[in-house]
Image (cartoon, rainbow, N blue to C red):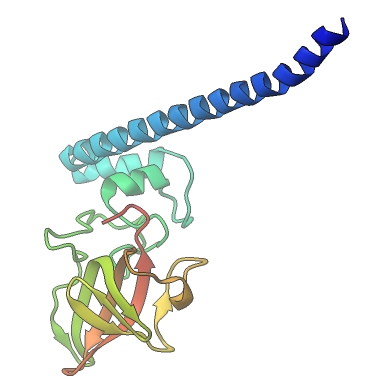
Length: 195
């Protein structure tokens, strides 16, 4: 009997360890499969949202409820389908809150926001780029082949994201104005949906 107890006390921890490891692997696989389903569903939602009329998109914005990170009255799921920013109440910076905005063409084919035409204003040429950070040597950050200079006035739009958190490879959207010799960064947004 004593010999049997020695075997049990030796084997039981190994058996429990292998069982918990297999259970952890199953949990990881299940979570990964769920994430892949969500990704496919988001792509399908984007496709279907583009096919809706403006009136139907407005109805969907007001009737579907879910998590609303920016508290603009539109759920994060619907904002994702519209292509608007889940963390910004005025995604296209046109002065109209997303919940009232009827222009859901948030992004143009070149990746810029719909209201940005790269025109010269009194304070310089507007420049907006969405892409991966290819170089970061404080205060200069390179995105999409353009070098932006970060200043004390540069606004980082995401909670918990600042100049100190910026690294090469991150997907960001950066807005600024060119004064002819350099582009001064005005706003930086971390793109959690990727590039």
